[in-house]
Image (cartoon, rainbow, N blue to C red; front, side, top):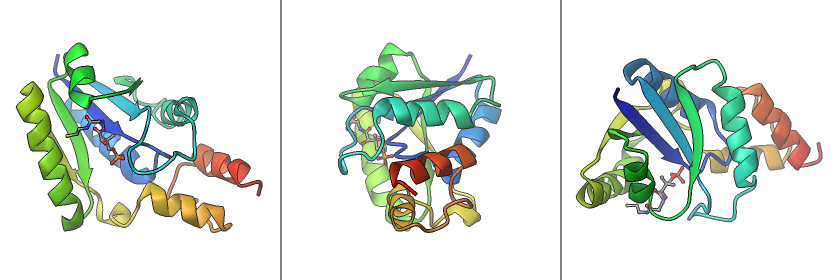
Length: 159
Ligand code: PNS
């Protein structure tokens, strides 16, 4: 029963993430989507519980997708959950350097390889950080994130 793990900050989950999750769910028996407890990049806009709730909401139609969370090293979580592969989306060449380095480091530590999906072209510019910024200033994010996420962004920014 091949099992994939899609890790990320998901602050918040975008249509780009959802596309990768849906495509992975077609190829693997089981997909574990795990939000990192303490994103490295910045203090998160949404709490871990909120990020997980949004993930659960937007993946409710996918019977083989489970939402989780992890703290510390990704490989420790992956080995404890006996996953067969990591899956990540690649938007542009700029993602490649850092993703390749992480993939090689993770494989060295765990023996678990990373598979990459090229992001669908219509989502290639999408980044959670940009979505947060657009939403913060009242921009329309309805084409970038699923409706429940757009709603939460509105509430977070008191709009
Ligand atoms: O959505 P993001 O922010 O690009 O996800 C990055 C994430 C969470 C996958 C990465 O930062 C990570 O795996 N963090 C856990 C700590 C860890 O294992 N670091 C070593 C990576 S080689």
